[in-house]
Length: 378
Image (cartoon, rainbow, N blue to C red; front, side, top):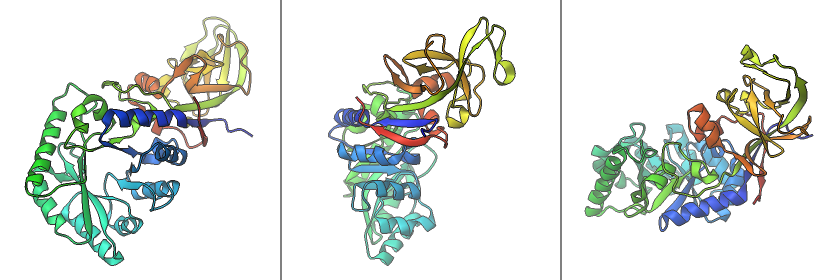
């Protein structure tokens, strides 16, 4: 029995996208960010594909993601796995034991990591997280030089990296990003002048890779990418990378009916048929990730034809006009986003209708979806 809703990842497209990002940013190395179960897509096949394509550094947001990712990549002896956000006191020792690279957001956190490394008889790799203007986590840039010096004096730490995060990188016209980059560069240069150097220096995420090329030139030697890997972009920035959509969300038709003119559809009766129309009900709704904003606006694909969503999307179902796909019948496949024949709908298309970005769309995919399908695709 086939699941009614299924998310797919075309691993061939994923690998090509990684290759394009790596080529654009070379000689900087690429750290692939697979937070939140690879943004809801399923981390297993995703991570293995990227590792096979050459990625040897991966980033996550929190410890349980690190454990899952290490398992997918063959354990602690596999590629580097790094927590990019924060680490809580009770999380430190388990992560040090697993060899996960940890962020240092302050001196007390560093002392706890050092103490855990001493108890375990090991050395913990850490990256200094510098707040240059994001205002969320990290060591304030004005205090960073003294904190870095104090942390480096602690035993059991390999202070291999330093990084920051950009608040406005999606907007190439906003000067705040350049100010953040300058603050970070001055800090790194000042530390280097005092004999403190780092193996890994990074500030770029996907938006900066597209919009600010200076973020993958010296002193920067690592970039972080997440959303670009599956071919999505922030709607406000440049699209300097020629990426392909690697994702599909598919469902099936529950019923097809000829409905007379004057029939109203869905909760709130927000659509009234002006003429007799062939209408299909599909087995996916907002519980499966279809944004309510697509009601009366969005489309899906049936047999390669665009079919408009009619009426308000329900939790479990949506209704569509299949007049352009007269052969459609119960059980037929419906592509919510992805390619079907010559037509293609992307998460970015949905994001534009909703007035958001692709992260929001992808991370909202419902828990009822089937096991993620990986295909070698095109």
